[in-house]
Image (tube, rainbow, N blue to C red; front, side, top):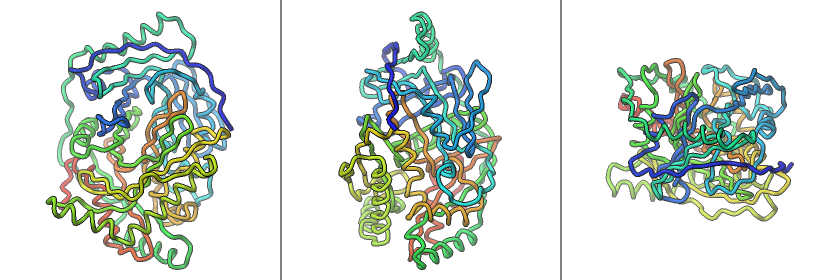
Amino acid sequence: METKTQTLDYKFIKQNADTLTPIGIYKNLHGTKKFLLESSFQHEEKGKYSFIGTDPYKEIIGEGNETSIFNHGHEKKEQQTENPLSVLKQQLPKMDVDLPFPFFGGAVGYIGYDSIRSYENIGDDLPDAIEMPDIHLMLYKNVIIFDHNDESVYLVATNLEQQSESVLDKRLEELKKALLSNQTTDPTTEGEITFEPEMDKETFMRNVEIAKEHINQGDIFQVVLSQRMKATIHGDPFSFYRKLRKTNPSPYMFYIDFDDYVVLGASPESLIETTGQDIITNPIAGTRPRGKTKDQDKELTKELLADEKEISEHRMLVDLSRNDLGRVCEINSISVPTYMTVEKYQHVMHMVSEVHGKLTSRFSSIDALISCLPAGTVSGAPKIRAMQIINDLETLKRGVYAGGVGYISFNYDMNIALTIRSLVVKNNYAYLQAGAGIVYDSDPETEYNETLHKARSLMEVTNYDFTN
């Protein structure tokens, strides 16, 4: 159902930023539960802004069908719901605003893979080894926006409570301090870090064979199996993020400190992006490692584009994205303007497409997000049966991995990245997870090695010796 829209009042200050960086602003920003969202495409339209914030006024935490709402400055409020994201619609009022930025305040956080259990029966709950909620969204009314195109910073204070202008001025002055403070000393991490798999190689390869049996029996066409790795760490995880953004720049880069844990990463793939009624998803399926030379890189690109297995898998997942959007978009509005192109990153190259649609007036962008969760590229096809098989073969909840991370603005525009190439840090442990798409003729060892290639960038930023 379409969400009613109010008008949002705000105030902002523009500052010169030629001597500033998003990293420096984040480090100098006081408060708790800070976030930094940025992109390696900083000089293109889609990545021209970095967003920084602190001190949310509200948090929405969903675990199964129970949602907790924390109004900071007030007592905790508990609320039961069958659909935790429906609580977000109640707590995040849709606002009209004439600001030119895609995000100027609203919700920041993650929607985990296991949140799908609130909408679909995919099997019994699995053990939660990390102990994180299925959904954790923090709502911000003050945001710092870094414009990379004109080297400016915008400090935005939204006026949800219709407060006086002097109150907004005070909030803006607090943000301004982050631009004027001296740079703090760089935190470091200490010691060698070794990731240990939580599933041995033989078990993963056996799971591939079981998945192939399901495929050969006509139960599914494809399924994505993953493995998690765990390491003990010491020091500040922000140093991992700083290294990651240099060694593996990606379209969707994020560092979110929830106090009890940190979620950071560099994802190549969008789960969903909405602007007004326009929706975009960009399924990625088909992977090769980068070549050591330019000629080898070209050969690997040709090999990827000629691989019938990869092409078949990619087509299937594009169709799945079309179906996901078709449930909430206008009839005949679905298009695929970009189809099976190759995008190259530091360690791997991927086959990528873009699927577009126009949201019907009956649905909000949050409904579209629900329709797209989880992406077919991390589950399989048909999606529900593939997730049931994942539930049978993987021994732990996926948690943040394979869900979505990003922002939902007050006007309901959103940019949610697929939570892959991500790291969770909690209680001096770091967790990473990577998967591979299994089809009828998959080679178990090849698929196992693909998960290692995808995990390589995060292993390197934590000083892991990948050759071991």
